[in-house]
Amino acid sequence: MNAFLAVVRDIGLLVARLTLGLVLVLHGWHRFTVGTGPTIELLTAAGLPEPQLFAWGATILEVVGGALLVFGLLTPVVAAVVVAEQVMVIVWLRWKNGIWLVDNGIEYPVVLAALAFVLVTLGAGRTGVDVLFRRGRKSSATPQTYDSSPV
Image 1 (cartoon, rainbow, N blue to C red):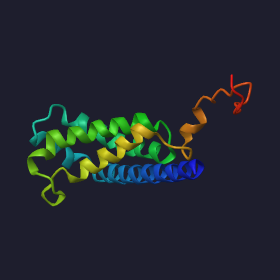
Image 2 (cartoon, one colour):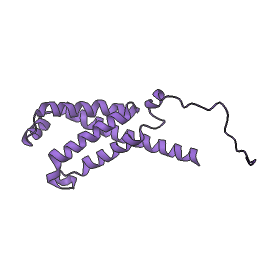
Image 3 (cartoon, rainbow, N blue to C red):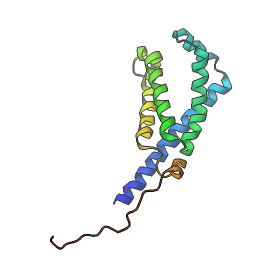
Image 4 (spheres, helix red, strand yellow):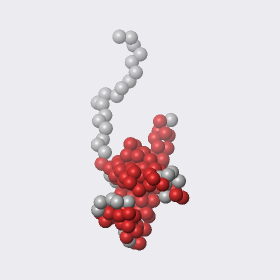
């Protein structure tokens, strides 16, 4: 049963990684091809300092970080940065608009942050490249057996 649950967990993490990674890549690529001008204008109107830096930082994070998530490379680190980015989006830009996405509210960044937080806490799973860099578990020299004799 544990092996089955481990496989289901890995499939769930794969789906989460691919979903978040592809959404980020597509969103960032759109911003890159259209230009960061609209984002810079939005950030300037919100009164943020250095809107160009934030706009380009978000674009690079979404394209490069999304690709890293798709492959499962540096998953907890990239996902933590995505959580931080989405919290900043919520606090600085969307909070005043309410919950619903149709009103430019917090709905979308909350979902992205929650999905990224799952990857921060659980990692890439066994289907990600990160697994190649894990240290092997030390196996004990003697196998553990059940001794039924009283001591």
